[in-house]
Amino acid sequence: MLSAHQIARALGVSKGRVYRALSRPYPLPYIIIGSSAKAGGQERHYTIGVLLPRLKATFGISRDQTKGLFAEGGYNV
Image (cartoon, rainbow, N blue to C red; front, side):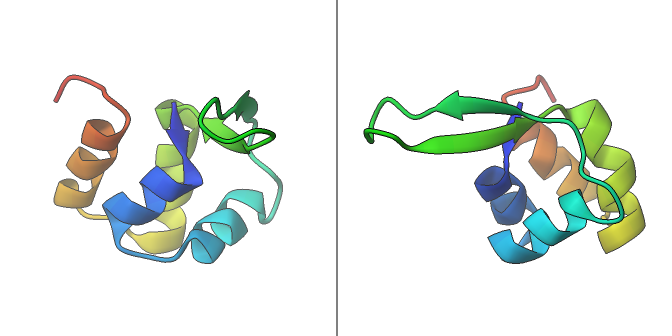
């Protein structure tokens, strides 16, 4: 599961661009996970299988950026 912050860090873009890409033309499915470090903090988390097609179409990500996404999400690379 990846948050918008992790996606932005792996791709080198802003969180706003990531949220825009993930919500247009239709929003991708996500789950909300509460942050235990901050009271009331919540983040949207997306699965890598849902993210990759949208990110490839929107940003035209490279192989290295894809590997960065897997590393950020804790997937075995």
